[in-house]
Structure formats: structure tokens, C-alpha cells
Amino acid sequence: MSPSTRHRSHPRLSLRSAPCPDDDDPPTAGISCLEGFRGGRHLVPGEALRRALSPSAAGVVVVTAGATPLGVTVSSFTSVSLEPPLVSFCLGVRSRTAARLLLADVFAVNVLAEDQIGLARRFAASDVDRFAPSADRFGPPTDWRAGPHGVPLLAGTAARLVCEQHDLVSAGDHVIVLGQVLHAEGDDVARPLLHHRGRFTAVRVEAGRDEAGRDAGAARPAL
Image (cartoon, rainbow, N blue to C red):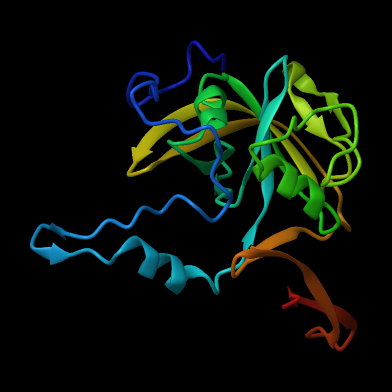
């Protein structure tokens, strides 16, 4: 299915009227402290919601696009459907990078590995060239290649998906992006990077036994 024929529930969403500060939001930012009534029910303040959800660990990805590459760190990525193959993530409407990513018909989702904290921080920062050819305070320069459809694929990641934009859904101070997967590749043994309680962490594998009595690894976040 080409970008011109895929289904959309509404025209392409524009963020031109949304405020765009110079910096991007970090992965955990973006829930504004809304408080009020809807349908007679009181809404929880955003900061209270943030605190309540902080024990929930999330995978970390970098979404990339563009012939002139751009990208941003995201911790809201999830699988949506296998038939058709759909994934989703959220972008804050205040992010300049997000506004540019939403104009891309094709993009990549790079699932970061546990040793890529520097990349996660670089693509969440606002004051660096994320694809600069030289090292910065986050470590060596970003290693990448042009993948299918010309999208930037980051080296050393746990998985890489190339997607075409399927739909956009406005959701408060974020936009939900649905992508239809065109290409997928991954590392069967790589461990993912996680975001938990406001910091990056890894999965710790503990020895265990499966139902057949064989040795098995039980994975859980390393806190």
C-alpha cells in the first residue's frame, strides 16, 4: 500500500498552530497538569498521574526519518496489530522534531539495546546535533545507515522497523502515530533498554527453571 492510498481517519494533522519551544521534551515529559471536570467526573492532575505510572517500565526507541536525518527518543512505543502489522507511539505536540517527523510518510523505529543509554540521552537532548560526525558528551557519534526507503537505521539496536505512516490521532498534548510495518529485523539475544522511574535501566536475567525442569532465564528490570 502506498502512502497515497493508505487509510486515514482524518486529514494529515498539522502542528503549526501548536506552541513549539526550542527544546524537545524528555521521554517522560509531556503530561500536562490538567485538572477539571469532564462528564461530571473529576480529572486527576497530570503530575499525580505521572507519579502513579512511574513504576511501569517502558521500552526505549529512537524514531528516525528523513533524507536529512532527524530523530527523537520515545518511550511510548507498542505493538498494535499483527494483521495488518501495526505499531504505535506518541509524540509531544510541543516538540519541534515531532512536528517534522509527522510530515514523514516513512519512518524507522529503532529499539535501543541496554548499552545505548548515550544514544537515548542524545536523541532526547535539544542542544546537540544528533547525527553529527564527531563525539559529544553522550559518547561516540551516532552510527547509522540508510535502510529501506532511505530511512536512517541506527547501528547496534535490538530491533529496527521501517514503517509507513498509517494514521494520526490527536490525544491531548500528544499525537498518537500509527505505523504500518514494511520491514523488520532484530537481534534475538539483545537485551532492551528500559525507562523506569525517570531513569534508563536494563533487564537483569536471573537463573531459573522452566516447566520442563530445564534451566531458563527469568528477566526483570535491573532496579
